Image (cartoon, rainbow, N blue to C red):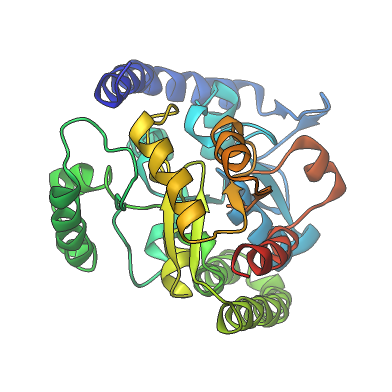
Length: 363
């Protein structure tokens, strides 16, 4: 199945889901209103409207962990994406919608994978839910791009993509002036993985802290103190990455996978090759893409083939085997495994592993 057909099928599936969203929201409203309680993962009843703690709901791991570092036990925190689950295959459940409806603060990314969120938030039952989009927390939103050798989605040439990418970036800088129709059109080409840059993470943390302080001034100073300490750690992380790049022999990464690291690459002046863009529908590379990536490893003496966490490693392994180099995981932090979640692994933990991997990849 080609990329266009995959996207069409995905869109049809989403439209089917969207048609049921208003019904689900109504059900959620009635259930929460009549029962006054929901059940957590352990089967224990929670009374969300009676809880004294601020209720914060996030879609995926990065903002979940940012809130955890800022607020600690002072908030009731929920992540909708289950540990180990792939973000591109996530679909909301009625329980998820109830959680969003009962939230004091709902934090989501705001890109193509969150189209379902925008539809849900338009329902009358959600009008009082305070929400924060990660893409609104950073100053420079980039468009997805297709670099040399990357498998193109049918109907787009590399030259057209470069021109569109430039135009998209200029337009995203003025996103506040977009009509709703324009926004819905451009959200499909926006690179939503803003958190992969530690500098963007700092901006996101600052925005989350402002929202928490506004909603819960009683713990405001605690939030500010925790955020300040956390931002210091993020700045140290940023320095570590810059030192690695400064001392590197080369500045090119090669991914036998999707590439959701455009903000990271832009922040540290890195070039890259990859099989697919960050939110590509394809999972099978073309023969030309495979040949290109294998040749690049050999020609540029790239020492490591990289892959994302929680993804299929067949492509990376095939390239690495052909070139006799190792495969390493480079964490996008979009989610973590159930084992990592239970162990309390953090965004900083994953990024520190990336520092060590980057040393090997750029040597």
